[in-house]
Length: 95
Image 1 (cartoon, rainbow, N blue to C red):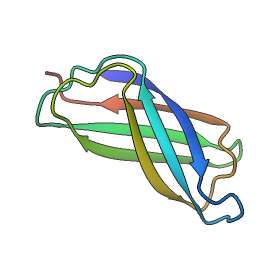
Image 2: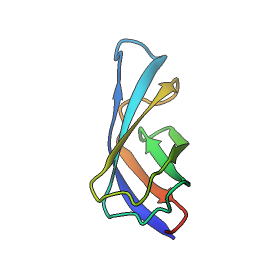
Image 3: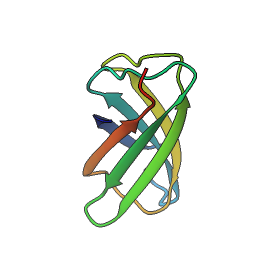
Image 4: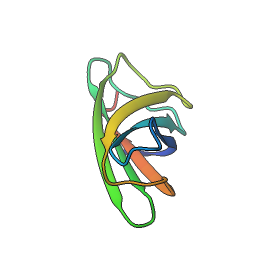
């Protein structure tokens, strides 16, 4: 089962550098009934209107993930300008 999420922001730490880093904050829009002791996989797609980049992050879970829960991921950014569109899903093992 896939659960839709909204990527709240992709923020460059250093806007003066084309080789900067993004802090990606992901907020799920619904509760996720994740099984304790498994990983949830956050798939995030970002675009600046010209370039697209996809990321997948594994997060160990201790049980269900509450609605409106935030996860923050930090990645190197060498291709994206200002983020104009974002989307993603959470893949998980059902409880």
